[in-house]
Image 1 (spheres, one colour):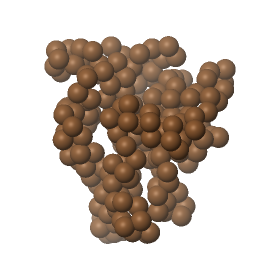
Image 2 (cartoon, helix red, strand yellow):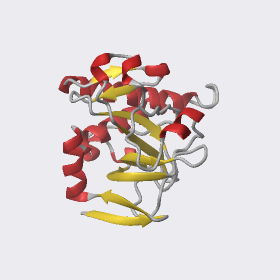
Image 3 (spheres, helix red, strand yellow):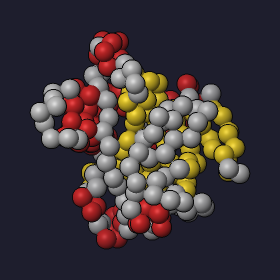
Length: 217
């Protein structure tokens, strides 16, 4: 099902169920892949204890998620680049890319509007505009072949109080302050419980928090 939800005068298209699977397929993604990525991150974070530096486990979770997503997508000819040290995976069409970030408790919840978890920098604030086509970077600064890049999608994740992982793949629309707060499209991913085991989920784990920069082309 997909819903069109008015949010602050703007229409937000929300996909779940079969509609979400169809939209993900158009982007070259699928739910089992995303669950596998999240569960890999969860398994990595679980190896950290309170004796590790604060935040180390969450950074490791994000790092492993980025790595696993890259490993899976390059098999389908996606390209991994790191503009300004930001891991970015570009679709073979060069029309869109994917980054991973953590979100608020509204992540993956259709009736609420999530925000990114961490404050974002000035470059994102200047780039995320209401009618703007988005790109994570000025492609010509990295590779002339990426000149057609127009959309930056985010895989946004949140671990709730029950240690379940909520997630969605969304296209940002607006950033009035330090966080992305408005979305044009939101593809909701089924919540997973890592404790249920990979035989139930189809993978094994959860997500981190990090910052990235979106630069308008």
